[in-house]
Length: 119
Image (cartoon, rainbow, N blue to C red; front, side, top):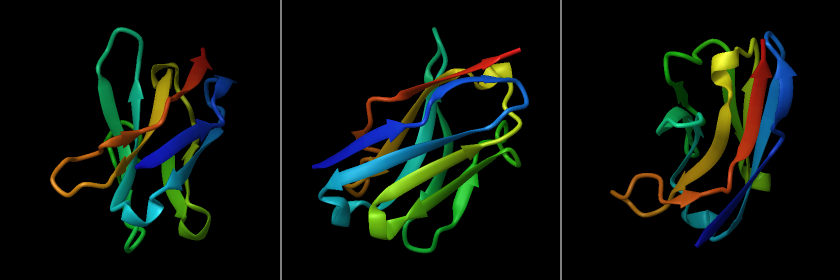
């Protein structure tokens, strides 16, 4: 099993920046991929972006492309989400996720961290 813990959320004004961190522990050797999701109040959880742990290739949903950057530190089992030019519509609980079991998608989740962007 893999445990994930997000930190770095908070309140920021529109146009500002935040950096989220995700610390992975447990059977991190089994992690195949990692990603960030977010869930706004009353809405479903949506994919933000992901990264391959093998080659570092990152990919993003259109709404954050060019503003958000995902990076990782494999040696420290850390995943990061740098969020720039934040908008009120980015307000959500942000979740770190890991894919361990092939074919099961993202099957390990953190508890989430709140990001609030004021206008």
